[in-house]
Image (cartoon, rainbow, N blue to C red; front, side, top):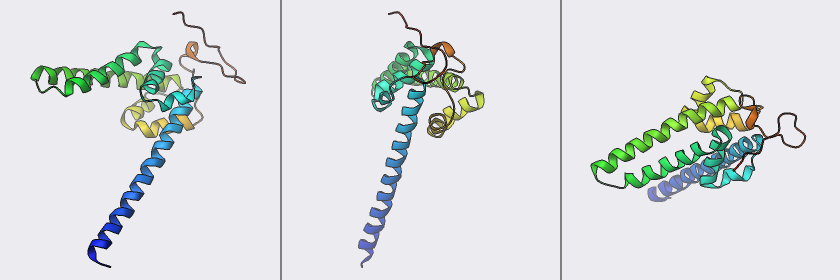
Amino acid sequence: MTDNAANAAAVAIGGGTLILIYVVWFVMQCVADWRILSKAGRPGWHSLIPVLNSYAEYDICWQGWWGIAFIACSLLSGVFGQNASVAGTVVDELLGFAAFVIHILQSSRLAKAFGKGTGFAVCLVLFGPIARLVLGLGDSRYGIEYPERAVRLPGQRGPRRHHRPG
């Protein structure tokens, strides 16, 4: 076997291993997000649709418009990031910062909604995917801090979700 063939085989094995790890990690994140939304009484399949998953997660913490604000800041930041002017760069940075602040506040509210403290909120910000696995696959329950937003699923005890006007 030549050196080129050995190198190609090593690259193929390494690349295949990385792809397999990524796919497993992605599936685990989908399951965790599905469980987080299911625990909050939302359809779990919302976690599979890119913009809807962000809105649904923000909705269980904020009840609506903050999710739209985060999505708008993120999308507009990408639009202004393509602009080569100084003003476009400044707007891009401000929108990115606003999205980051909203994300920090949302992480704190998500932790509280599942009965977790400030330390877990910091973990959600710094180590989001791992903390989300703990939140989704662990024994935490939704509606502890914000019981008025909790949805009672069939067979569960707790408050019913009140219908929001509008």
